[in-house]
Length: 339
Image (cartoon, rainbow, N blue to C red):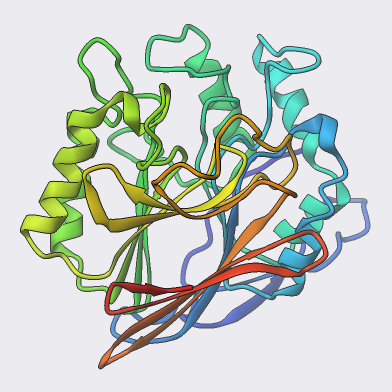
């Protein structure tokens, strides 16, 4: 399947690069591109798109064309990038590879050829509702690394949680909610990942700190953060007690769009997106008190624009459909949402 990882070094900040692949005896490939992040001390505006859940039976992934047309700085892929247990279930590494190849349609390839991607997995990259005890987790993880541009951590080669900065304005904390999850010890993240998150959240000087979780913090159900309320509340309490500013929660997985309040922390909101290409979720009532906004009519993606002014950041969060129509818009200023 000709996947390869090439580490690029010596790149200039805030610069657009063109590249293409070539093989001896073959014509060079189509030119691709990406843009690099600003210098760490630069307050630069940033726009990114976000979404997850792409099931092979819902090809083509045409919603990725308007995402591409937005010309974002990067794409946050929220997990369920394949559905390995659906249609023809995958069990071997080669079968997992086959699931990724099935999903590389023209729309996804076109998006990835122009837009950098920060990707995390959820359960369907291995099997439905997995935790750390699933026997095929190492196989699914290997296939995930094989098909996505993730630089392995030198101390922990299997680690997927990580953080990125986009200048001085934005820090992204991308969580792994699967491979350390243990129902017996009641942990979603595992102690090491949890302490990493708390330490770096408190130390972050970014105007806006996005916590990216494949499953929602605000969802009270099993397999979501509601199954691990102690750890969820510990994280939310830490943010509140230390008055950490500019924290915004982003999530997918549940196949609906929403602005949702955190249980017991009504002043904290979470923004939920998707699915990009999967069945809509009709099992949840839009009248649940936690929802400020709820959408389950069509596939959708998020578009987030950050203006990190010295006086305080402004964050615009939009939900858009496959025809590039804005479904809902929220402006966050000084921690206050304006729909």
